[in-house]
Amino acid sequence: MISVMKKIYSTILLLLISFALQAQDIPLFSQKLTNSFIYNPAVAGHTLGSATYSYRQSYNGIANAPRNNFISVHTPVGNHKFGIGANFYQEEVNFLKNSYASAAFAYHIQFNRTSSLSMGVAGEYNFMRLSGRTNSDASDQDYIKLSNGELNDYDFSFGLLYQTRFFKAGLAANRLATGWIKEDNATILSNYYSGFAQGMIPMRGGEDMLEPYFAFRKFSETNDTYDLGLYYTYSNRLLAGGSYRSGGVAALTAGVYLTPKLLLGYSREMFVGEVRNQVGSTNEFTLRFDFNAFDYRNNFKADYLNSMAYRRKTLNSAKPGSSGSKGPAQLHKQQKKMAAYSPNKRYQNINKLSMTPGSQHYKLSAAKKKSYKKKKRK
Image (cartoon, rainbow, N blue to C red):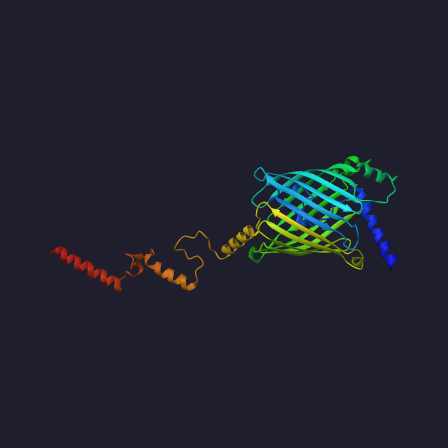
């Protein structure tokens, strides 16, 4: 049993180191907590800006497993027509330290108050070096490059983002230079893609929000990753949800808004099956500060109230004296009060339709006319 565990451990560690040496992987941070900016440059300055720090410890059951630190800042400029931002993350795997930095620029086209299209481009710099001691073969070519600091690379990415009131989706072509320019006899634009689609469904009259979520990430020719999740935000204060990733990885996410602008979040990922007992789980902690307080309730609640007002045939600007949404008793009282001013009345209290010979009003009117004539003769 011990030999089997050592074999599993060695295999996983070897794969992690080999994967890191390829320098092709961007860590799979939770997009729900990090706003997807690490993958899609079009998110830069979209809606509001933020500063994010995230720490991710992968496979806590394995020594020297990957550890990631991620810092991201982005903000809108030019009256929200443009966006700028920067990302930096550092990954440590055993004796390797991989660092990645990028700067992004985005252009936002606002169709109306809730619909927009964003386009962004990012320049990237990736470099790797040794961290700590190793017993690797000093004559190995990769080891020599690491020792000399030659494993560094430049690249760029392009992204699109579209959003409406209840839906948003993004698509990015990552590391275009690697797949398009540097590969010999390249026939496709890029080998690396990422995308997501997210719904925003108001609940409880706009007080809460339900978000179904789908993400796709392809960062190598053989590695495709799909995420399917569902998240619920309560009163713009508490966030909870879960997701499932291809390859048998389940995740739980929770977050709390310490202030209207400050979010503290936690995600825990676990393999499904017996592998979980061998490699452990992955923990991710996120602290995000939004530069502008975003409250989805301002839009959803207003829409809900307006729709209810329309259904009840009431308007906030109704004139005094209109029936509005009064009950039957109030409506009857209002009609009775205004009956004296009806066009069917003459001199306010004399009904035109009742001015017929023999009626009480007719007799009173005739008597007044007769009395007036007598006075006039005198």
